[in-house]
Length: 240
Image (tube, rainbow, N blue to C red; front, top):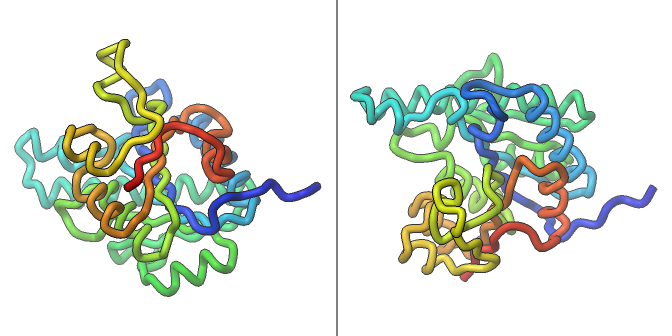
């Protein structure tokens, strides 16, 4: 069977931790995890080099902990640990789907993950491994969105693909406003000027400054990751 065509050589995929909950209110839905892993495995089989940053919002969000009076740095470290749990779960599901995977952590925890070293990460990608970047940047006060933009720049990714629970970037919250307008293409400046809740401003600025476009699309629709990797029109494209 001919290998599916790919558009991109190297991609940074940002996965929403909250999307892994499925219809539940906490944790990881096994069916959703299996679907996501299957989609990632199919995308990897096109030959694209895939780095993944996964959030931890299905387990713990640092900002939420801080809003309840917890010390922000401590809350962020807890959020980083939540991303490690998700990374290990995704690694297992990917390996089950026949996709070789490496987890690299920005926080030292050699028993379960390799330390993040940029050149080693690039080597793994070139050898055909899907590389999951866990524990954020390793420092508090940074989101996993910013981590995704940072890792994309470090590994030379051509695009950041943010897979979330909505179909793309809207002019208002589509959950509360059924009339919200979906943008198919929008600029970095428009995102920042209009305070659109796509990624945090630091992440958008990093992508803009390094000329890395962002594609925002719905993770929950089976096959969307493969469609995005193949360059098919999907979600919202953010570019200069």
